Image (tube, rainbow, N blue to C red):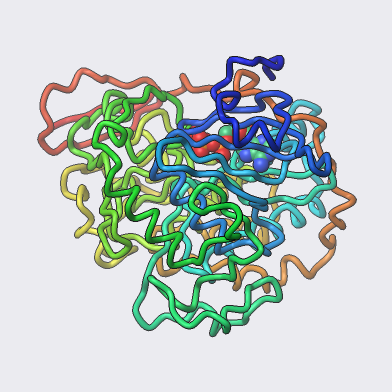
Length: 467
Ligand SMILES: Nc1ncnc2c1ncn2[C@@H]1O[C@H](COP(=O)(O)OP(=O)(O)OP(=O)(O)O)[C@@H](O)[C@H]1O
């Protein structure tokens, strides 16, 4: 962590400094800098997340407003957002994350007990269930975005890529409402979907409103956001990035790095921006490669909540083995690893898959007798393997929903989940440099000049391609 510095951009924000003492910078992501800070009024330690990208800020605030009250989603105490400045979200401060839990267990060579594993899984399922009940697709689930408090509460965080999916006629509240869901009955109308919006009265939304007037209405919130959105320049949306590893979020703006890394280069769909309106098409360039569902890897722009279920399955496998399930080094390698284990993706296993944008552009050699997920989960019980299988399967509609898995007998049988207080929580968050993962296991010929359809064959040292 950096020592306190007065040169951080957050120090130029008089409105923030008047209310918070910035203590240290604790992280930075593709779009943000995050600081630990003390709220002057009551000494509460918070995280100030300064988001440098308009759309990411919009999405995160929108999703977190809806999800406030869910115990397994990070709390947003407040936010600041003026037209000419980056948004700053005031979040509960969470000391560590699931990546650190996994790495520490691995480093100490002790693994996680089944009771611990079940408790971590239940908390993840609860968080994802809260999102999906509200038709929010997170789109970047990975261990590093599952933050953990010092007392073991796991919270979904980083909603910068989240989208609210609107399905006409879907009533998210109809199905087993949970106690934490907000009462929306007092709201007569909403700009988008009356069922899914929470009360916002308990949030003090600074920046859009005159402070003396109190919180803005939800309608006003979205009106001003829409105005800001219209003003956002193309330049802002087209920032170049240079991420190379599969553990890093793919950005909505990831036009460069993934394509350079990739055998097929231009044959995948990488959009700099997706339709602003909520009914618009979705970009396939979301999430973090290792956790990215096959439909995204094949360029789908018409996916659903199920992409989160795939990611969750990968995370569950990682909790069980302490190793990433499919640590692809590029998108083709990612697909290739999946196919090696699950077998070829074809109409038999997922009717309709051949309509995926890039399906016909990439042909993998036939994988005879794929070993299945059992091979990736050695020494794990049949129940544990079948739990992962319920999520990591090709056909999105066959992936079990979070609310279904919460009822799975696995969580009710011995050994029972440990109480949250029984979880071992690392004292700190591992820095990215501590990463013990091997990114060099797959060697690619990246010398592809044109993008005609490819036939990929996996070999013991990587992959070979043939036109
Ligand atoms: N509420 C929080 N409490 C403590 N630390 C946090 C909190 N939120 C974020 N962080 C830290 O800041 C880092 C960046 O935050 P976050 O992942 O939300 O930003 P991002 O720009 O959306 O990142 P990414 O590149 O992963 O999409 C995180 O890895 C984490 O270390």
